[in-house]
Length: 284
Image (cartoon, rainbow, N blue to C red; front, side):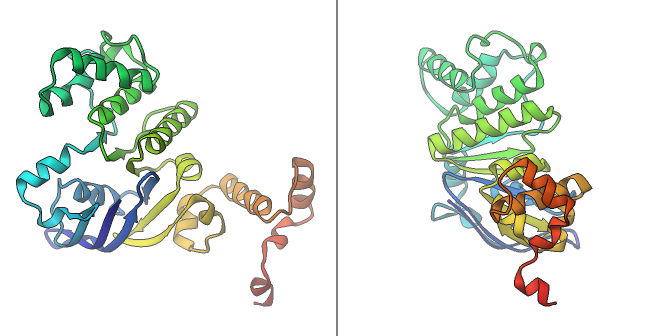
């Protein structure tokens, strides 16, 4: 578990984060969402220690990063896996060498043990036999899976993902989402994901933090989003008419009003939006 307590961060005279508090739960996919400039990338960099907070605390399972000695920080970082937006693979290295890189940096294992671990994680991301390929020979989705394999090779307790679906087609994005979600559950990792991908929000958003203007605007799950009444969040999540219609249909389904597509079509033709109003809404 990672606790964020009253975090502030400014650059020069510009405040980027203001009084952010949240809990990133273990064994869950924790998402940080928001428009460009909302502060989500800065918050994630503060969480991994790349930026120092001006005020507040970031606590990893009871250990406070903000006042941690340098040696202790180094030990903590060995428990953190990172999946970068562009995968950040070394072009001159093979898949095997890319994944083995953290093992070379942080362990004293012999070569055979390292290769066995590389093969284990390659099998887990369904890339068995790609050891000797170079990044240029891989598709975008395969590169992401190599990035995931490298991120988990050291058995991390915490996994940070920066826009894991950036540049991927929708189908491949769903594969990556599913893989991250499965690994989070399988290894009981605290996973923190920065994303703009609304499919990720709706499919794997177990714990979601929405930032707006550097402040926490909303917190909840993907199920909570459907029924939320926060104007800023709704404008961000359901920006298009298609997504707004999808939200209406999901709300009808959740309330048990709709059993099948035929009923859905009939209800929407007959003004189904009125059925979404609760008693308080109708009295206004």
